[in-house]
Amino acid sequence: MHSTDSPGPTATAESPDGLVEVTAGPCGDLHELWLDPRHQRTRDAAALAATILATVRAATATARREATGPVPPAADPALADPLFGPLLRELDRRLGTG
Image (cartoon, rainbow, N blue to C red; front, side, top):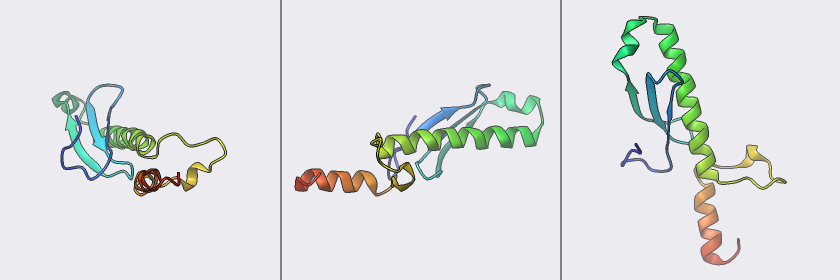
């Protein structure tokens, strides 16, 4: 379930209880949110909010890994750029400098 209007990579994650599914980008941008109707049985808004946030974080982490690719062991993962990294790697490839 990937959004067709997404400007970049996205990833989908599902909560452990299966009641929440989200598709998010590498910077936490939410593309899709699906709530199973069974979530209404608990009527615990705080728990639902926590589940949504945790699921968005999981999808974001996966999208970030997909966007940046594997980080070389000597590289600093904090410097990996999920938005421009893939573009810059493609430019390096085309120019023969990477």
